[in-house]
Structure formats: C-alpha cells, structure tokens
Image 1 (tube, rainbow, N blue to C red):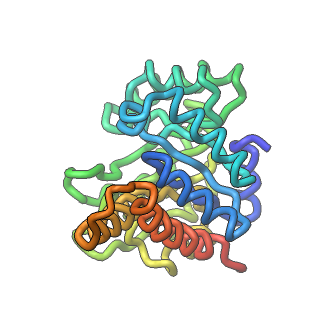
Image 2 (cartoon, one colour):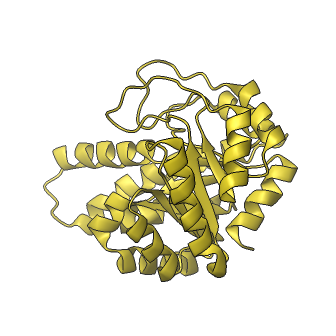
Length: 273
C-alpha cells in the first residue's frame, strides 16, 4: 500500500502512523527493532542534514536493506525538504514520500513551490506533504501562530497535496513551556480538508494530548529530537564508564535505549480507542 493510501485510510479510521527520523545505522536499527517488537508499521524519515551527512543513495540503500532485515512495513520520507532540487532528487531516487517545506515564504510562493513538487511527483505516484503556518524550528522563537481551517482548505485545494503539517501548538525541539495542543482546532481543520493531517514536534508532548490529537484527525506524528537525545545521552554515559574502543559493543546500548523510547511511542499511538 502506498503511503498516501495508508494515510487516507488512517484519516477515515481515526488512526495515526509514527514517523521517526534516523541519522545512522544505529538509530535506523533502533526504530525498526521497535516497530518489529510492537508489530507496527512506521515511516522512516531523513532530513536534508541527514542526507548531507550520509549521502542520498546511502540513506536510501540503508532504509531499503534494513526494512528487509527486520521484516517491517515502512515507508521512506524526506522530512522538511526546503531545497527544491534535493526534493526532486529524492523523488527520482525512489522515496515513498517527500515534504516540500516552503512555509517560511509568503503564502503565494508556498503555493507555487508546493504545486510544482506535486506536479513533479504525480507520475511517480508518491505522497507529498507540505506545511502551512508557523511551527518553530530549532533555535527559533516558540511563538504559537495557528493554522486556520479556511486557510488549510484553500491551500490543499490549490496545491493538491496529500498531507498537510499544521501549526496547532507544537514546536520542533524540546519545549520551553509545557505544550498545549489545540485539540478542537485539529478537528475543525480535519473536517474541511481532504489532506491527511501531520503533527510535527511531538517530542515532549504528553501521551494524552497525542492520543486526543489522533482522535481529532492527526494521521502522522513526527518524532526526532527525543531519539537523538536518548541515543546521545546514553552513549555519553557509556563512554564515561568504559575504556572499550569497540564501537560495536558500545553503540548497541544506545540503540537499545532509543528503541525502547520508540516502542513506547508506538504503543501510545497505537492505542485502542
């Protein structure tokens, strides 16, 4: 099943998929081990920075081979693609999904750039995600400017996207103040748009809010910061207490902790309503 078909099905059934970023073999393994243990489907995400670090073809090959190794149903997605050329390269390389993020540009430019990617991806039959509103990125002011239902409806109809990341109280990175999702607003946007709704910045959002968001129409939940954090914190701890230079023995402990985190998130998202 194609990702856009799965997300559309989720929208109808009030379910959601976890979308997890990976940065190397260890974090990719952590995510897929968790998915296998919880019998979950999952979205594997790479950002532009991760592609720069690993290489586009390496990242794609890693994801493909790891999916086969663990026997997990997973889709590969480009997260926050702002470079149009790179977005198109990911489409050409066989990604299942791409996000074109022109949300920081004026609305008319966002519509034009997003529409161009939708048209480019059409013959490939893949999922296209875009963003509308202000969802602060790392280092930006965590002000809350919410996506409005009428704006979302017009944007989806103008661009033809499959999935829409909306600003409803989340932010990328860890929160400076306790997050409070606008649950009712999610329902209002879901009621007037055909696109699958995406929640970015789930790291640190309480489980009850995530589950409430799913009930109101969130069909894809992104997780990144917490994965990086627990992997690196565990690794730092291990390195302080060992002289072992064999990374094949040290890294698995960090992978295990990251996998436990992802499994907990999957169990939260896959709750029985």
